[in-house]
Image (cartoon, rainbow over all chains, first blue to last red; front, side):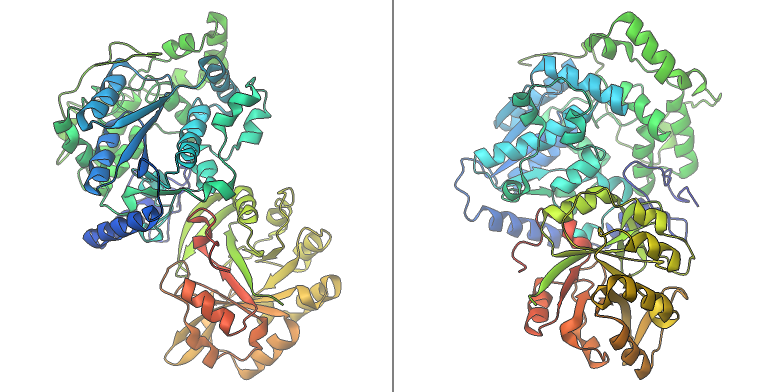
Length: 388
Length: 233
């Protein structure tokens, strides 16, 4: 059996998926644990763990919170403050942010009145890294993921801050790769496996990327002997993780969701110029599905949509057009280069989608939902934008 | 011999590393080369790599051969479907330090004899997943894919053909509730040649040291936190 009988996942999921003899995938199997875990006990464990880690801490901050400039950041920060921790917020600029994402990021900083470091990689070399990532691995995210997962660790070491707090651990939440009882932490192994799709720095920089050695440092994880001094924990191991519900709850802090054409989830990666555009097309090319399928599987598991309705919604979004031209303009690819890429790498798109299905409304397919009045995007790929 | 802290890794026939829970639920870990690389970096004393066939007759030679370009210095023991054919692939390469057997312990001592001739008695390891049920021990037989009763003769034979054994508490596998040490009441094998595995806690590892066992083989937990074996020695 290659497809789960309960959700939309199949065994080709890039995170790794197993379907058991009863036809259930590990994602659904692991999700069921959530109903049997005493989450208040887990929260106490989290408090104790943080206290233990911080016993010898001498830094100005208790922990680092890496940000995505989306709704989950707000939820993480809310809970970090509930733990009475002094966080330093860190955002690695991937240059894919829109006016909406910068607005949400600065609102987070000012609303909670916290310190925020924005790391801007050298944009010329960053674009070269993105080009290499696209050319060699059919992905645009390797450079960003590499810096996003390495920079907070290096910063934590420099600032003698022994704790990094992340939100949901995708490998557990999406495909149930680990049990919640495993209490998996951030590791160099997980970074390569889950964030960098098994391409380490040596493989990447050995593949023709013209990145100076000085700047390669930012893409590189510290040696394990150093990295082990920092503990990275995922809140989803300690809290009953329900992204759509959680993200709706943080609207009160001034977060603005996005009215997206490519997904019903107005919160996840809201304000990205690429996540549901070129990145999703490349996901489809490599793995045969678009992001909204992960989100629909999640909603099936939370009991908010039936599988048959989810299939309808999925096909509705499969039919939607995506805009990839603006990404190639940002990447400074010539017109002929762009056409060549489309003709050679994206030629499958010609007959990809339209199967003639249609929906009256997406919202009508959910038994309960968390739709909000969101904002449209007015400016994409903002190189630098300060203020609200 | 000093006490060894090793790690068990499961591998499917497509070359993907797996985690196993209670000898039933399997979860994909991912790229085996990445797993081996990090276990090497975490300085485990040895790696026990097992292809769980569970009754399926699959030739594992190709899967094993595919491992050899992973640059690790940690001794690597391999098991799962080791028969006369795959034995040739394994023994011609010094990359593999030892061989782990399960079904052959019960049925086919001839393969073990061949392996002993080629790699030496020190390279032969028995893999003994067990469950304790109604005050008896049952041992897993991979080819038959079931836990079976064994006689005294089994232990005598095991002692003569294997240099060491890995004793896996199948019920505790992948959890954190601890290894069932009661097994030693039913188990007839020199304990200084035994490694234990399955749900090991820090206390279990201390106890294993005190008992002067040969060592432990950690299961899933090795990759669940950075440099997880620190503080366990």
